[in-house]
Image (cartoon, rainbow, N blue to C red; front, side, top):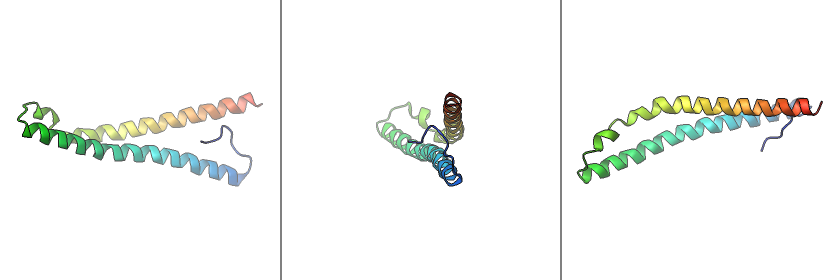
Length: 97
């Protein structure tokens, strides 16, 4: 878990920045990996419903709708993390002054 204050040394700040960027990259990786998993699950559900001759299959036909939603969700999640992280750093900075 990242610390609540910035290190004083340049090397410490570089390590801190790299750690934070890995968290943001992990957020994007999570969303990018979630979309194909959802596509696969919905594809399997569509095939099962089609095999059972359920007429609600047309609801699941357009699976490409996931990608246009994944990119904004990943961006919003990363921005939210950044804003909250910056807020905690500011609060910690002004509390320790």
